[in-house]
Amino acid sequence: MPWRLLLRNVRAHWLRSLLTFLSVAVAVFLVCVLQGAVRTLDASVQQAARNRLWVQSAVSLFVNLPLAYEGKIAAVDGVERVCRWQWFGGYFQSRDNFFAQFAVDPDDFLPSYPELEIVDGSYEGFTRNRTGCIVGEQLAEEFGWRVGSRVPIIGTIFQRADGAPWEFTIEAVYRARSPVLDQRTLFFDFDYLREALEQGAATGPPGAGVYLVALPPARDPTPVMAEIDALFAGGPQRVQTTTEAEFQRTFVTMFGNVGTLLTAISAGVVFAILFAVLNTMLLAARERTRDAGILKALGFTRGTVFGLLLSESMLLCLLGGAVGIGLALAVERGIQYAMAMMLPGFELGGATLALAGGLAAGVGLIAGVFPAWLLARVRPVDAKREA
Image (cartoon, rainbow, N blue to C red; front, side, top):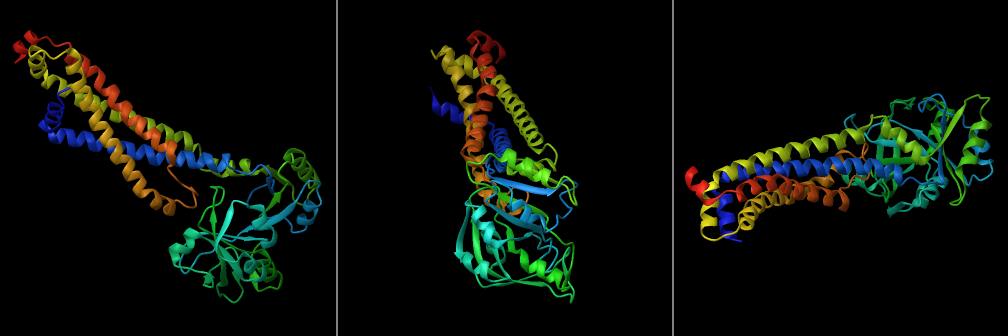
């Protein structure tokens, strides 16, 4: 194979080669990001724990449940622990600094999430300090917080009667090893909120938003869910109990069928770049008719002519694919920060990168085969006549 001729052909129309290369790079970059998002959404459902259930109002997720429900749920056979959750909905300093905050039961929260790791500080401090909180590693890094930092949160749903912000002290920083929890959330003691409401020091809806129910690992969740639902069938607030996987799927479907949409966009990008590269290689084949004839006259085989053009197509696509994958890896951390709430735990993953690389190689192969076959069929006499 005359490799020097291959490089000369690529450089002969350097602008066209550059544009083709960049087109493939952009397409592969988009495929990496879009498919990374799809896989992250799927992982939040697939990696959900089988032994965690969520109890919410049967009317709406935004309707609170009575606090009296906690003891009744805890008494159901098979329930290991119950943890109250309440969406807080405040912001730090300005509305632009919005992130998730939840009031939870410190004694039951961490034992319910073995995939949550404390990387700084002490969780015991969180359980002892009524105004203590724990924050995600990414959130702490973003605002420069550390253990002991004071964090004032201005409430929107729950407002203090004196108009002052809610004061929290960071007792620990956590890292989530599962996309079920993100790294950009603040958790604080539910009783801090409850006591403020009961004493009239704050205003807001009473009760708990949802109850997290932890079961023993081998326990079948189906009868437990049925018993909890039946327990409150007569009110005062009917409930709907679901597995964590189904609870996560509810949030994913709130955005519509995002996975199918992103996959369809990825497919459209791949087909568009396939036709673009195919057009480039057809032009190249037509321009090199004379060169092919000369090569054959000199004794080179059809296979050599075929391989030259196919190798050019593969070279442009593989180099473009490598650059596209590199760009996706370079912005992966930025996407993790920007999309922490919508796509917790976003990562490209080896499967996504392998898919993108395979698509780049496939585009190069498919777009190069037909033009290379046409060029390989050229006879020296035909090439001389066209020249």
